Length: 279
Image 1 (cartoon, helix red, strand yellow):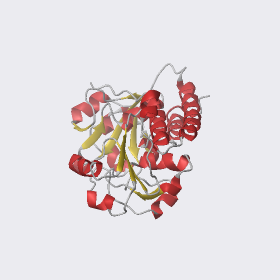
Image 2 (cartoon, rainbow, N blue to C red):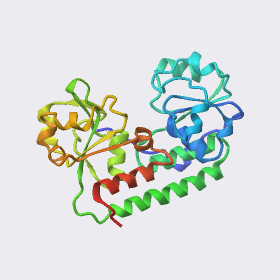
Image 3 (cartoon, helix red, strand yellow):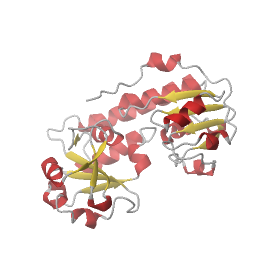
Image 4 (tube, one colour):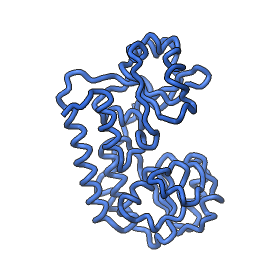
């Protein structure tokens, strides 16, 4: 199993500040949220489709989906600097963009408490505002520690099956190494599926064997996820503890899986839904 390690503080400090951020393009919703949280949004001239918060970001031009970028779309807004979250693509597009004569910085993505702080620090260093980023990192660190403290004394951890989609009756679920796995751990719970990384379609036998206490999904108005009634009617889901107890939690996808400034709040909300108002 691949172990992801968040960049160290020294890594962030080694990032070279952009010479010109007057026309910044941010690829990755969490990076855009961090830029707004730092109060540096005046630099932004465009966003990608995963950047939906805060609401005013929707007024910026959209250069495409982070995993399906076209260099022409990104370059059409004449950026002076590109801040790109790891995992963006396709590789050919990133190769063109990173050799386009425009300042370019990849920001590592690790779905953990420390990974969030690392992203904040790398963004702050790239934008030349390391003091602001340290202040924000300290605030987020305290908020994440407070969520962790709420579940530290739990003797029994609930198991969660994160379902990405149910298209065609196939349950596409999260294993390890994903944002879903990360938020489950931050909320003091356990992933019901740990024998693979990423997202895969589960057999009915695997779903029954996982036997989650709770099903977690993105709230996308039924798109790709179906209704709760549809999910509970699935023959394998119906045999699990989650199915029998109708235990389904849905939260906004960017909020739940963003791993940015709002993650402590999302993890805290998930704790409330799983365990009630534990101290």
